[in-house]
Length: 310
Ligand code: DGY
Figure 1 (spheres, rainbow, N blue to C red):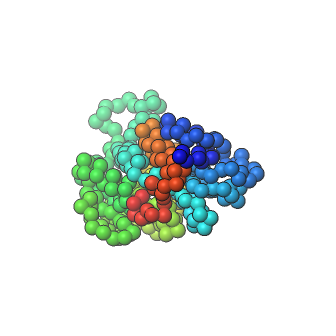
Figure 2: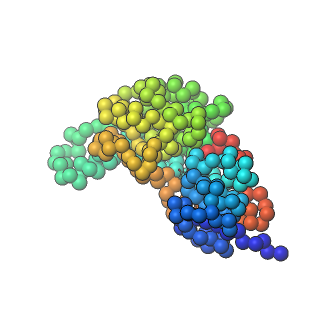
Figure 3: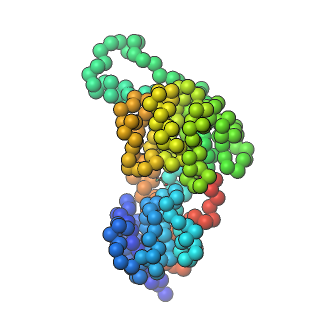
């Protein structure tokens, strides 16, 4: 017997063909949801708060993304609503973007691009300003989960020395473990790959930012809230450090001071934004919904994932 199609609300048209495999899907932004919808059993969101009171028949929240910090998982669990996410499929794309930001910041790629476009390049190549070498430098990875490990593997190709922190200390052949403060003080490049949760909100505060070495680079492709953004802006305005930032504390707002700084490379939360990865994310979202539709356990429920696997 065929399982009855689950009525699904998707907060936008998620990329790729997989969404079309759902028989009954309606695209509707959450702020357009004004009255209770008893018919909806599945909700597809991109890390958005779930209005449980408006969706009394909900069975699954399928999150398009690995991070689900804006979804109240405990409340969903109380209501018997399963929450799933998309671990694994976006590791490579996010690690690639972290490396793009590391390279762009360390080698002043964006500043160079602006310089050429401004028409001010008039002297010999041998007279320009100098950046710092990437090869042979020390990379500190905050959070050696799935994405952090993918960054560490890429670091091998650049002859980097890798240090890492992990919430649950465990040895890894990808680098050397350090406590967070020691990692910040020892690294020339620090890349953040921790999930946002109560323990990591504001983890890199003003005191810890001050531990960074002069001239070091901070890269964040995880969540803006993990860093004290005001304190980071102050460090960047001073010119003491540089940063490659894909995420911000109040997206899509970006602190105005950052916009003119030459020592910052900014991207609009595009860690997973490749066609292949975003389509794979939709595929996993849909597979989770279809599993629930068939009465089977979802593939990637968040509750069974260790925080270290982000
Ligand atoms: C996620 O998956 O949590 C990202 O922030 C979107 O790529």
